[in-house]
Length: 145
Image (tube, rainbow, N blue to C red; front, side, top):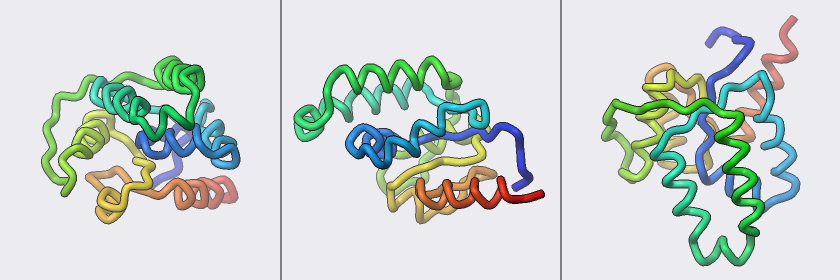
C-alpha cells in the first residue's frame, strides 16, 4: 500500500476498550487522534460501542465519564460514514458491520484484536491488523526517506 499522508482507519471496539482498561495501551491510542489518521465510524459502530461499555464486567472497571469522553472524542475527531453495503463474511456475524464500514469508508486499515477478523488479513484494499502490528507498520513507514 502506498504511503499516504492520512490513513483512513477503523479501530475496533475491542481496541478502544483496551485503551480504557490499560494505561500503558492508552498512550498508544492517543496517537490515533492526530491529523495523520482519519478515524472512521458509523451508526452500527456507535451502537456496538454503547452496548459493549454497558456490559456488567466493564461497568465495574471503567467509569462512565471515561466511556463518555472517549465516545465524544471518537465522534468529534472521526468521520461518520453512512454505510449502505451489506457484508456477510465473518464467522461471527456481529463483526460484519466493520467490514461494511471498511468497504464504504474505503479504509486503509482495520485495527482489531479479534482473531476471526485478523485471520482474514485483508478485506478489499483494507489491511486488517493487530494494534501492535499496526504500530510497527507505521514505524517502518515513518523511517522511509
